[in-house]
Amino acid sequence: MKLIDADQVNRSLQFPALIAALDQGFQQEFGMPQRQVFALSQDPLKHDGFAVLPARNQDVIGVKAFTYFPENAQQDYASLYSKILLFSREHGVPLAMVDGTSVTYWRTAAVSALASRYLSRANSQRLLLLGTGKLAIPLVIAHLTVRELTHVFLWGRNAAKRTELKQHLELIFPHVEFMEVQDLAASTALADIIVSATGSSAPLILGASVRAGSHVDLLGNHSPAGRECDSALIQKAAVFVDSRQNVLNEAGELLIPIQEGLFQAADIKGELADLCSKKCAGRERDDEITLFKSVGTALSDLIAAHLVLKSQ
Image 1: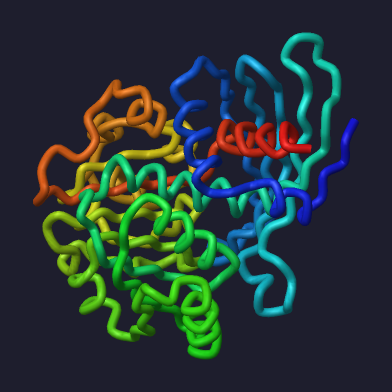
Image 2: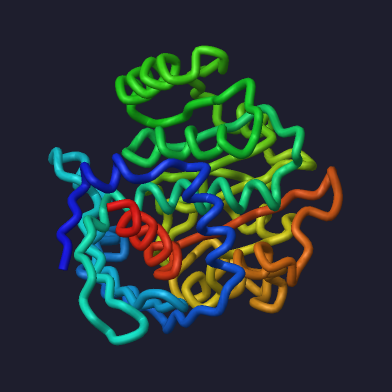
């Protein structure tokens, strides 16, 4: 059995190939039981958790275990620690243990970009990114893989991290204009694509500020009591998810408006697998607001980890 660390993962993966592998993988036959997420605190304001995510496809069986401590950054720890075990589909032989933390960052950004390819306008040029954590750079790189962005607005509560992020991205993409922003409502109104990757438990993106034709991607919240957008946005958007069973078990962005009687599970237009396999339409009009809510899937972990293994 191979042991694959974070450095090997980062050397193995590139977003064009990973996005293509995810697109293909979500079109094929797979099995993905309900993942198990365990809250580690009874405090509703703390979202520390432990999760186990199993999946299989035609080639491999896998399970990811991870811990999530969103407040870790305040104490110089990573918010996410994870390992992925891979077994052969044919005989169940253990194949590899892969660093799941690095895989998670890669596949989360790649899934976000893949969904945007189906749901954002093809001529989208302005991206608003909420969050300055470790996902920020992968998210920008992934979205620039699928859209010819000219402007990227960077929002985050920590001014020093915001500036550091801007300087880093300017070195990678000198042709793109990166701007630090503080007025979130005004920046939201300017953006074609809005990606929120924060640990916020209260709405940051308000439906009243999102303009027609925008695409919104919410990936930071994993709590039934938390949310990164308000109910007004859910009401006015065409809503897609990475996994119905996971989102309807974990994501306050949909669970809260359902409890308020403002949204129903049946209003979800489709899953990522439906978009990839053309079982549902993605964006149908240029003036439509689309929204993609993801909490992560075991299948995306499996596909990404297998891609890493095949490169060894």
